[in-house]
Image (cartoon, rainbow over all chains, first blue to last red; front, side):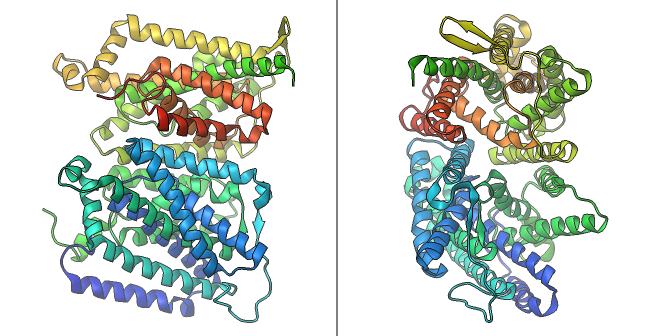
Length: 334
Length: 290
């Protein structure tokens, strides 16, 4: 299960990583505008998938309401920007503790009272739905009519205010994804990471050897929520609009988890690979359908569903672990 | 507001709650026996709702007439699903089962979207606007029929589990999986049967629900969630608990819809869920785990 960076062959992994990073850095000079937008979407899902993976893949806590952290952070940053003129990076500083606190509340309610497994997942959905309906009826944040960021014509890219062309957004999300990858790599090999692993594999046993499981599960939720909040700020400033029905909806939460599951839960490359496979295929599908003049609103989602079904039935560990063995970047599984 | 307004709304809530209870009962039965959380529960209900809508608009068949046929179709669908797919997953980790059902749910909901489009579809029965006056109380005819049908269906299900050999066998599987295997029960077939029964419950509930709300392809997730809230509130694995939870949530939603705007009513269901998890995690009628 724990394939990826954790096991052997570091040189091949370094080469693979360097090649991937170089390709991604060079991409804006090669691809057209449409493909650049697709790449932004892929990196966005790689980022959110990686963030979700901290909770599920590392610590074994299934969250199905990650849209709540994206939405909360997006709303905090967008409100600060539109009402007070506070820039997105300062907004992010405000969004991180709010998202982490929200994660802490959900975690506390669940872990304190022994709500685990699938019931924990249901609780996370319930909170996301609670937020969706709450924001949909909250006049202060424009309720269901949504929040808009002013779109002006930019003469230059303003990185501090996150106003600019897609290329700038591309490098921002690429940098964020790379940073999160590094952070997850460190976390995985840290003391906390090994405690999480122990909890994921057998919580009773982890408690028996003296791990404060409550505390470390709380850390997992809060770290995951905190890093997810950047995705919310990015979303708000990239799309320039926020609707509760969209940002908090269950399907957003499911989109977040599809990438890492298809790629491989608990691996570092899984979320990235999954985002490329899933978003790439979905975009290919929708563009080839529109080439034939077909407009089917649910088709992409059916495609997602079939992909998910295929992976859970045929590749329960995801695409990355078998691929990693093929590439020789992991020790042979015992 | 005068008191009888509240009473009227509460009675409407009770009747809706009976239908919710039947829907949640399906989830509870499946979980209690197969130990798989049916995350496509709401989507199964939308299938039933669209069958009811189509049979009404094409053949003028009343949803209450279609109740048993729809339940039978959903039974077959559930049976096939368990036999072909879910039985292979019973030994897999929880999240894996759960993702299987999420995938099925996504496929069902969006296939319905492709076939029927995003518009809401209503069933206009002859009695849609009828009501009965009992003293100061006015009871919606459609809600009354739906509630009565839900009671009948629930009683039949309880009787099945209590008094038939098959029902007893299924309860045996739920109580002791290994024991059931040892005495020679065909557990996989009984699981398929149970999933079919659960699907039949939610199918019947769906047929009744088209009398109360419009059918749209995307109703699934929120009703799956509602069924969960009800089952957890009532007590996991407790069949009467699902009914009590359904009534509680039905009345709460109705009163909340009256006091605030109807769109916030499901927030109160979630608030109840959180309260139950805080103060009585085993649910109202659930047993404390040993």
